[in-house]
Length: 325
Image 1 (tube, rainbow, N blue to C red):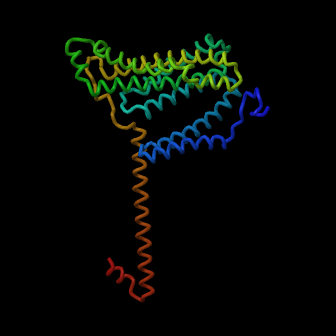
Image 2 (cartoon, rainbow, N blue to C red):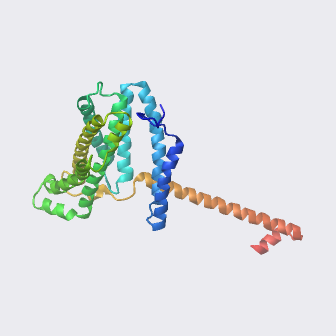
Image 3 (cartoon, rainbow, N blue to C red):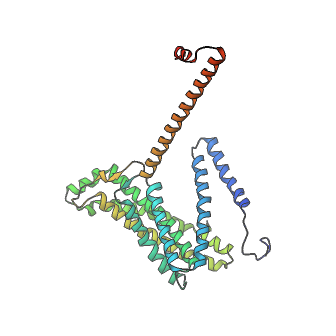
């Protein structure tokens, strides 16, 4: 059936279509350069990453779907959580605390896995729940949503403990336990983490048609079924965001405020992540090596030129080099 025919449920997209859509990113980059926003390179880099990552994921998912193996599905779900944790810790967080990677991974696994299993098996009524075409896309959406909640909550906690530690220390000095002293910070952090999700649910369907519902409609599902599917997904996302934010907030507070009821700002790292520091070190060494090689090449070319000119003029080459320095 041709894409343009009435009743067609799928549309074949080529790389030409993707390239045409990429022109929108180029337009954004041009506007950024024109107005001096300084985000043009970030836009292009993010768009290229999007193309590469989605292409790789498409190849991997195709193999997983063909195998229809529960262990392959489990491995893919763990990989999505692992990559989400790396993105949270390495790229999204300006401040980090000790043992942040395992605590974020625990928060993501402890929320996305149980919520996805219960939601897909009972709310979506899929049997078995690990059906690759159902389970993996849902886990991917849950991971993407939990990243935002974790970043918001942990960023707020670390900012308050690092910049306004006097407030917490005052509570501790008056006899409050570390959990009592940190309770206002945790409450505000969780409120900030859940606010975007609440706002999204309040406008969904009236002002915006979300991606899951749009994809289901484009895939041939009825509008009613697509709407119900989106409701289920939104409730699962809300639950995942809440659970992951609570876990990571508690773990972050437990690390930075120790069992002796002391605020340990020495456990907060405000530097770039070690990955980026290592990258900058490697790039610096490469630049120095290239400059050194280029300098040696230029010096050698100059010596050869002087020697050839001296030979053409009939001068003694060593004596000419001594006189020219």
